[in-house]
Image (cartoon, rainbow, N blue to C red):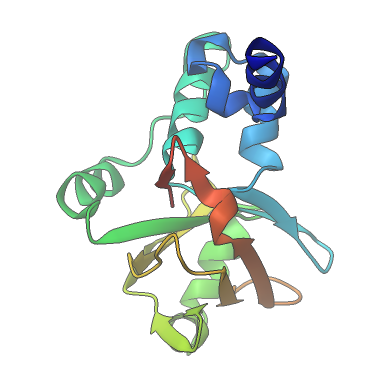
Length: 191
């Protein structure tokens, strides 16, 4: 009976909890990177992929994807990597894949758009609101907008909601919500 219960518990766990990143299939890696507790698409059209870039399972999936493909994912910008090295304990990064870096950069350069993004993009946890603390703009080689937020979410929180203003998009106002308890990875909150 104990063996049966252990087997059922093992089968109910998501693959990222029971397998090491080296054991993940290519399909599982893409699932983690595109449709998981840490990554989801948000509309309206054009939909954008939003993910918690500093969450361990996302970073591990991206590392595995770099190792396995002939056209590997590009390494992150050195300034971004250095920021993470210095600030990982106090901040996390929400990444948004834009349709093109040019549109994102053009939108950021438009008068008032950068300021509007900084003022209107926020994270809501319970009744508290937190402004983003900075960002890394998209580049031609990496059309990803990376927004930096303070690490204020606890595993005991129910939801974290992001209200975003994305310059250069036809519909720049976007909202995305993550269920905090689903962001646990090996018993630890990962964002």
